Length: 224
Length: 171
Image (cartoon, rainbow over all chains, first blue to last red):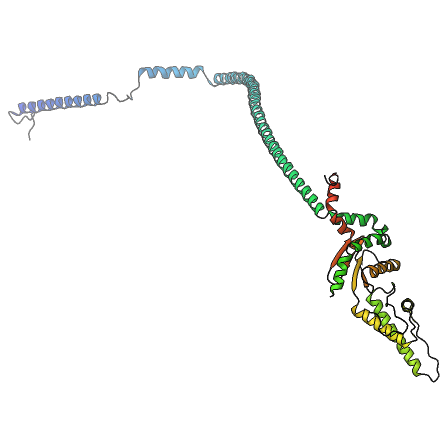
């Protein structure tokens, strides 16, 4: 293939020019394409962070460097010490405030607890007293019922005993009347039995025999 | 029971009051038998040795004195034996119970009354029954007579009841 600058060819110069033009056009088109591509890339990376250093950053770096220069280690140590002291002071104050607050809270808590406990105790005591009163009332009612039952039983028992005593008395009187002869005889024997001699009874015995003489004679005469 | 062939005794035979019961009659019969045997032996031994006469008991003495008998006479002994045998077999017997043991004097008076009022040859047996108290209980052949104080009280039961209730008799 021959270039546009080839002298040996007549039309060689125009051809070279054409090639150059083509190259130029091609280059132009290529650069245009590249520019278009770059543009597309820029457009595509429009939302992405830029890695390029901003001038403000540079200023900031410079300011930082100045700050580093101003706030050196000694100054920072002093500031740290001051800060520590201030922090300790604040902590102390806060501790004091906290202590006061704690004491106050404790006192209030004690008062609250006393009040609550007192109220609770009063309430419980009231309940306890009420329970005792209820129990007392129940016990009183029970005792009253028991007393009433005992009185009733006592009356029944008394009536029953009186009936039994009366029946026993009547029975004793009946027995006494039924066995009165033996009882009187026993009494007479116990009282004067030793003092009664048969000789003293002879008149009585003969009198009784006289009264039954006829029956005895009849029985004797009738034979065995 | 009059003896039919008694030599000296035409009167009625009787028992002394001390001979009260069948036991006494039996005892007299045995004693009389012993006397009879002794006298029989005495008669058989006429040859000579001393023969001891049997002693009579107080009861026998009273009996023969009461009936005026002489036991040396065989007829009297025979008569007495017949009488006692007849009395032992046929005399009426009554039993009387007392609260205490009767004394001989009491028994004698009682037997005298019984033989005078009830039967002249009545025999009496006695018993002891402490529950009687006063009085006696008479048991004949067929009957029972409670003559005790207890029976008397029983007969006067209403009177006792009236007295206990404070009533006058008859109210």
